[in-house]
Picture (cartoon, rainbow over the protein chains, first blue to last red):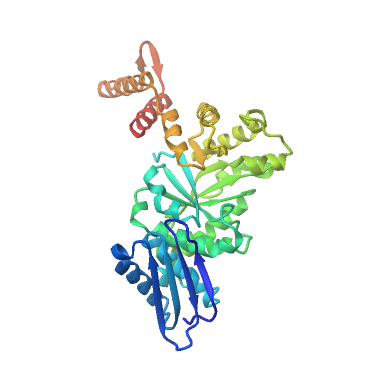
Length: 98
Length: 288
């Protein structure tokens, strides 16, 4: 799955996160994570983001996360929403989202 | 018997509520993909609900998903998320006929088969919000073996009826409440009363809970967590009711042991419905 256009999902409200995705000119996968709890949960957030992108087979794109203390399930959902919007994908393969 | 006093509405795109609503311990949580979510956020909310349904924190609570109407561009996708995510119940809004429930039943069956859920695992409840829905309540309530509950939604119903709303909703909802409740009882399913919109008015809320309880509704749809405890306390039986229920069950047990056909307590005959009510009273007391 390839990010074709800029897209966002989520909010900057507490317990949520804002995910911005954009095409990568170098065809690389670049993930930037900002979080108020980066010291405690930075590795965990990155793991969830990376796994979620992996299940969607996203190999290239710019992914910027601004986390406000979201649970893993919220991170998964917002990353999925941003990627699907950025890929212009209407059809969902639910097995990839589990 | 599954206790369904409180069904808490949780907007599907509200991360904070999705992350915390389980701590309030309502009997059922209803993730809303319909009116609480703007059209541009439906896709994201659908994914949020799909992931929340699978979260371990929600495994002990009955999970309901209110999908958009199936004839909208969102309905079918919502249904996929709900059934594949593991929702216990799909709530269909604005139900007007049995055909809509049968169509929903068919689609749910297909998705269950595709995703490997046991056939019939996903239950259905209908919300009636119009004159047609209320008039057809019996056929709606009996339209599918998946049906477990029917709810009355007051706001849309009153608009459809050209009715004016009073503080207690009493005269204007009288027929609808009675019709929905009769349909539920005839179909042996649960009945939910309308949501109470003013979350700062506990007195008004409790007055309305009293009406719902007196009429025989299993519970109410709730829009704020603070209403849960108020409702559960209001639905809790009194000490006198609990004591009477225990004596009824003890008398029934004794009669069974002695092989007696007629059961009596304090000189009054006890019918099977009275014994059933006594069990329900104890169950409510235990859950309160």
